[in-house]
Image (cartoon, rainbow, N blue to C red; front, side, top):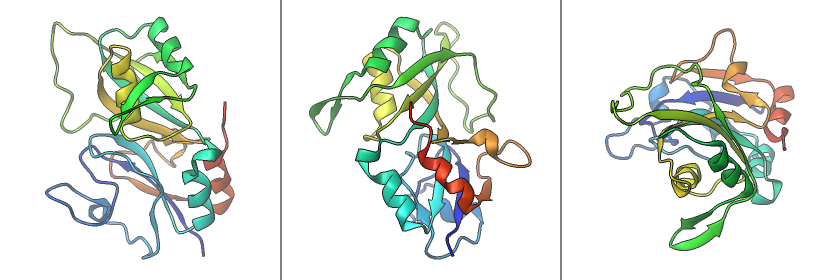
Length: 201
């Protein structure tokens, strides 16, 4: 039987069950996941937000295959007042360094947004009175290592907080009955699973 779990991965947690250093892992969520359920993709320890775990290998392959280019949307807090011009550059694709090689990102969708309603991060972002921060929504169709951070840095706006808001057409806002807190786990149905790879722009 295929199972589909979503979590709000907290800041500082590794996207794996295996212990590594002092970081928390998915095993610390306290949820009795079936033994054959694993995360699809990953979020870095210093990123947070939506993560899918499943034992549906067909769905895993569909989501992880680069040619399928499914969408992920991130809410990104950056240092400085992000501009529309910077978002247009991000949307067109920027050149970043991956493993020492130059890589041009695929066209994306970036737009400035008001500060979203999200749980407080623990620990919080360090506040600096003389340096403003702002938020943007960034939707991409690929998943290179630390790609979002590299992209925002390339246009002069270093990432301070990174929250994966959605995968395909499923977002943190779809959790029921309440908006999730970091560490929350909820299960969705096989019928909902197709929404993970819908939503291309």
